[in-house]
Image 1 (cartoon, helix red, strand yellow):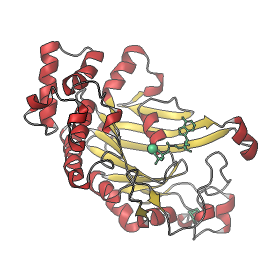
Image 2: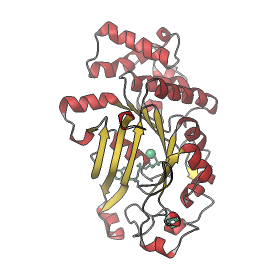
Image 3: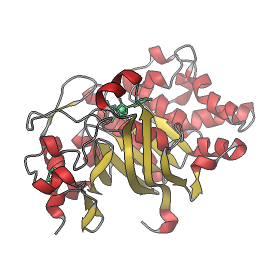
Image 4: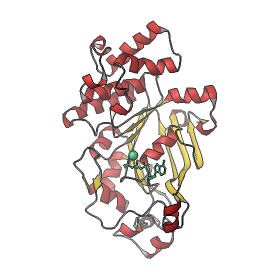
Length: 328
Ligand SMILES: Nc1ncnc2c1ncn2[C@@H]1O[C@H](COP(=O)(O)OP(=O)(O)OP(=O)(O)O)[C@@H](O)[C@H]1O
Ligand code: SF4
Ligand SMILES: [Mg+2]
């Protein structure tokens, strides 16, 4: 990725949440380190996958990138602008550029509105175009997301559509503002298996054709493989391995990546992992050990791991791992 292609950049970002008084008594800690020093970039027409067990900080990372939470520390640049200092008009313009597609399309589609109003609303909020131009844009984006003939869907309510059609409307709503950065959080896990491929295909085409930067949170290995050029594995607020998706899946340097990628996804709609292959509980993010966060579950742990936190090292071109096994 050249500097010109870079759309979004996270520089050592941290998000600490205050811990409730009752929990503070047990852990002795006053903060929960949900995201604890992440650095990465995403370029035009590139999708970065984010995977890891429940609670490792994936959604918090996405919300930081969308400027929905203030950072505790670090910096996020979108097209070279520091998003934390944006106010007024500039903040509004950032909101145009960064959009999100949720796991459950109902979260972004008001059930009392027809498709036409759902898609017109963001244009109205940002005062884009007159009434006729807005309708034209709505028809255009419906066609782009494969809802043809577009006219037929204008007067439909979300509950009158199938799950796949609803997710297509949610994608249309995110795309109608012509963003440069798109976050998707488990975009197909609530959909019937038979229609997932179609929606993934659409996302891939949109990211490619519109030269978007994408961040795709998913528990699904096949989805990461299909949609994401690079993938990052998160554990307790850190990226423990990041690299080109195929290389990461094939090589699996980090002991946690090995365990995670071998895990069987649980067959419920939330699609959480079941890590039968390792023992031990995930340490609390409000009570982190001084050394490696994966220490208590790692089958390869060494003495140094208990005392010193590993730092990321580049093992191959663009493939980084944070583990003492690779320090020499
Ligand atoms: N608003 C908040 N206030 C306090 N703690 C929070 C808040 N949001 C998230 N957390 C905590 O931060 C950690 C990371 O949460 P996050 O939702 O980012 O995880 P996740 O990886 O998205 O999990 P999942 O796969 O279940 O969606 C968790 O320990 C969670 O309990
Ligand atoms: S640093 Fe040590 S404990 Fe942590 S993952 Fe590597 S080998 Fe395991
Ligand atoms: Mg989440």
